[in-house]
Image (cartoon, rainbow, N blue to C red; front, side, top):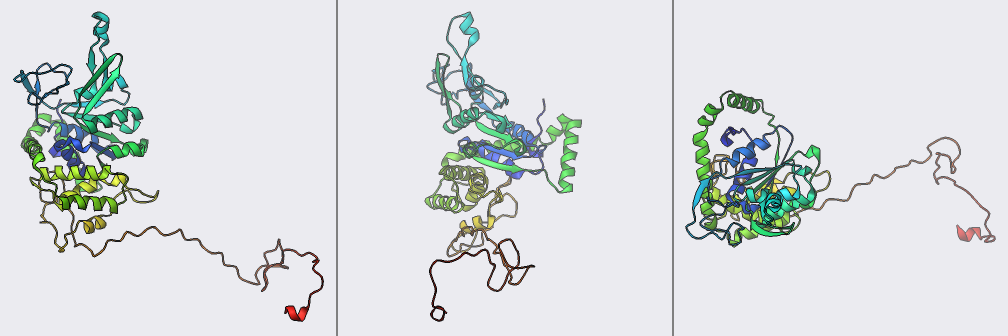
Length: 421
């Protein structure tokens, strides 16, 4: 079965970049792709999984242990040094909406339990996705407790199973990608915050882009072999670049100045909790590695913030879901008014998926975030001597001294009129 080439996808630059950053650093926590139907969400996920470098695994290990650093707690281990190994492509494991908990985490192997009377663990989808990609289509329709399991495993890199008389802990490091159509329901804010990056996708409105999408898709359907061969060089270059970025990732330096800048950005955009700061820092480091840099710059922070913060902001019901790019540029502007070395290409200085940096106009003396004003209440203006008839409780007529609404006899006795006046 042929997979549509990742390089041949038209548009969706933000999604391409988010998927690439998570491929470089799975610790980011995965990508949530939100968009209407027919926007190539699933196509891009499957295409990007085919770009991942091949992995070397211990032969016979159901959990895909790395022979260079095997898991000491592996159920199929321990694996001795120099154990037989082989190379295979990184897996793309698709989790269906109707999956049960035992299928996701694994459970007792019923076949061997009934035939041999032994309690043996049967790996689930989390174990199969180790060192690969776990793809959840329509994640908003998945049961909340299953989404919690996926996000916990993606964050910790391990999965613990205690059920059916089986107690197992195994490695589960994977790139988590979830797609959803907001028209079919939203995720709870607690689950939304657990995804590292979020991307909004929509079909292009430019007729030229739409025509090119149809042209390429028709060419792929007519001759899949020829179309894939045409884009093979670009695909191989992207795969090598992802592998190089993974090797460079541990050497990338995150200076204190960059860390303070990340904190300032997160505070200025009024995000919830500290997960936004952590994800932005990890994504900035991954972007620096992807661009071939050994130190995080303001450009890396800007790109990471645009992917990590929009779904974590506190917004009123009628606020726009995006970010204020001008405020972000002001926060990350250079103190002397000069931006980072700009580049003419839209990738912000590095080739590949779009990674545009901020167009820094210079840091202002003081950044002021204005609180929303109180809602304006219109005052009722009533003119005197309006309406018909005599003034009274049930009459709309008014006089210069108002309306008469009632009267009653007083019991305070006579008053001294001249003194009162």
